[in-house]
Image 1 (cartoon, one colour):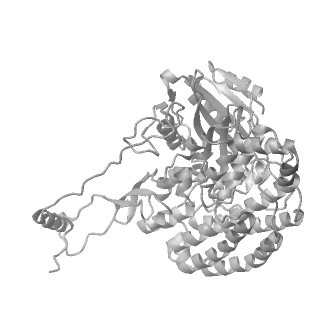
Image 2 (image 1 turned 180 degrees about the vertical axis):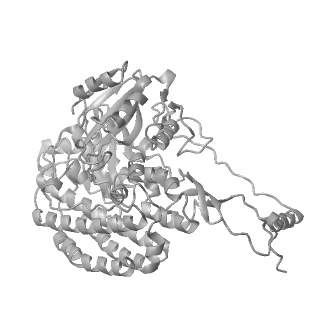
Image 3 (image 1 turned 90 degrees about the horizontal axis):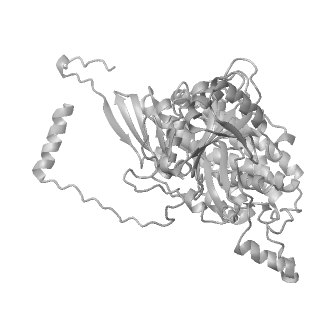
Length: 402
Length: 196
């Protein structure tokens, strides 16, 4: 409550709350999120969330596409972690098909998933800290992210949405110089991350803006389904990579950082720690990946045969034509294989009716659930902290609305 | 814990519930009757032997022309973490899928938001895109599409391409007197002094 002003007569002191509309074009809402906040002075009494401004019906569109054509679509859902989306989708479809990709492909996929995690966390770090007022960090972290986008470009010709991973393997073999590019990034990354940390980890302004702000309890984290970095920063020791291992994670040596404070600052430290672990994983993967080798399964009903065979063998030409004209059939059934995406558990619930097009594709988006929990986090905070709290949840509105 | 074991356990704990295992490529799947879904979810969450404390996904699928046409799907997760939900060691991590068949002519399911708070928006999304009603839901409005949208796009009989006429709203027209009066009223309301 505000103290009444000394010179104002008591009867003119008004006590009703004020409603403030924030968004959908507010720059700190990371897209088009609308918040209607009820304020008592500077304290938030309640908040309502409005979403749907980016809804593009990707799930309906996916039902019209052949299985392989869905990959570019799902990459555009969560546009900051495109390759995690496609990995989750591919893993579900491959479970339905009952195929297992070669070891080398699994190593490459693991590497790509971790590069994507670093990429996404760097964007989060830059924008979140800029919301709180530190612009320098954004420039530093986007600089590093640029190098990761260059690696994507080298890999597939695309920077944001490479569509490099395909059902049954990869689109093509690794480019020349890939190892060196990743290695040189990994060599400079710890120092750059340390520079960023020097700027903010013990920065008095940053600490005051983030500590004991936006507290999320263990119970709330699970009740709202925020499994991922959010729950780990609140003390839930759960990571899909360790609990339900997939790809090559069982063979890798890495730790799952867990913090207990559950505030905005803990979520910052959580994600920075995850970037360090991702770097460790990437380096281990690099050692296992040979520069050239097998990059897809050899079932030509699912993946197109190599070009030299298409030009010389009748059988390969037929298969090439079939793969590109009618795609492949997926046995009827359903699957939802969880993976640990940058924002938390990502799953694609995929239903097949036995044809060459999916009957249902549903993305479990961690951002949607984080968005749902926003009023719980914001309630009782100061209006100036709302921006810090939204940033700390790491929502991507493309993933919320799909 | 495999599907048949879960089936016997659940039938024992929730009398009258119909629980049948179903084939799935990834993890245990049970088809359950919609009348008992809330009791089953609560049992799965609270029973110390079960402890599926997290609803990771709630969605639906349309199997037109099959009848019952819809399936509402619940994905549950047992974290297997230390000290959660109970202090000390907890049962190992596991996943479970529950499916509720819903007939097209009577598309309604009891709401799960009384058990899992995050079911609130997920059910709104299913209502929005499939038109399945969730009985007892505190706030069953459209989530992604505009309020006045007609139809439910993820139904199989909804056309892929629909053209909706562009709606325009005309600008508010104010006379100068009304404009000034508005500002004056606002000033009186906030007690601000005129600067000029």
